[in-house]
Length: 116
Picture (cartoon, one colour):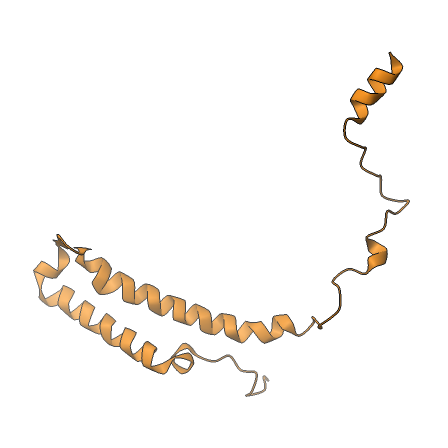
């Protein structure tokens, strides 16, 4: 069982006022699209109205939920890393006998020129 302190924070707890405002905007947008046929059209200044009445609040809610999931996963990702340590020790960076070395630039041309 997960510890209550480590439990993911739901989106409505991450930013409760923003979540409530987006839910209200989405409810108003759905109501307008159902009740008013003119809301299903386009306006010359702001463009396609269903985008602004449904699409934008839905995408903002999706981002808010994504941020809540990302914030919940962040401590688990940071758990293994420590400050001041390298991901790979310096010994792994040295050339090893088992790995072939990359030839120097122009190696094939130089060998052809030396053979001639």
